[in-house]
Image (cartoon, rainbow, N blue to C red; front, top):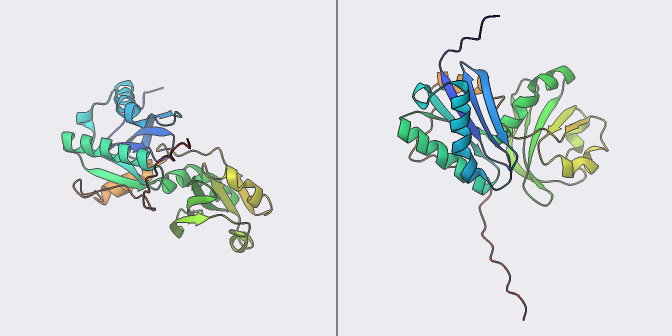
Length: 237
C-alpha cells in the first residue's frame, strides 16, 4: 500500500475553550493527526509543547504551514485567552494568516454524519456554570438555526423545539441537562462528545479558500459574557 501523499494548504488548528486542549493538523482539508490533553488548568504550559510534538511527529515544520486557526469561544476565559495569545504570537512570528472558529461549531462537526443518519438537528452545549450553558443550534446540513447564546436551562427550555424536531445534544454541558432532556423522546444526547479541533478540516479549508483571515491586531476571543472578577471572602475572626 502506497503511503498517503499530503498536499497544501497545511492548517494547524488549536481549541482551548474548555478544560480540554486540542491541536490538529490538516492537509487540504484532511486530518493528518491531532493531540488532546484532558488536564484542567494546564493550557498555558501544554499548548506550545503539543504543537511542537504534533508537527515533529508528522514531519511538518512551522515553515511549511499555510495558516493557523484558533477557537474564539465561547468558553473558559483563561483557556480562550491563552489559546488566542499563543496562535496570534505564532502567526506574527511566522508571518502566517490566522483563521478562527467558534467552539460550538467545533463540537457540532464531530457528529455531523450521525445527525444526518438520524435526521436530527444538532445542539452543541458548553458548560457556563450553574444551570446556564453556551449553545447554538444547527440542522443536519450544519446550517445555523439558532445563533450562539447563553441560555439558562429550565424544564421547558427545549419543549417547543423537541415537539417537532429530533435533536442531538452534545458537549460538556449535556450531563447537567439530562434530567430535563430524558423527558423528551425526540432528544438524543451524547454527553461524552468533547470540544476538539479534529473535525474542522473541511470547514477551515473553505475559510482559507475564501481568505477569511482575522486581523492580528484587533482579533480577540468571543467571551459572550463579561468577565467578572471576584474577591475571596474575608475569614471571620
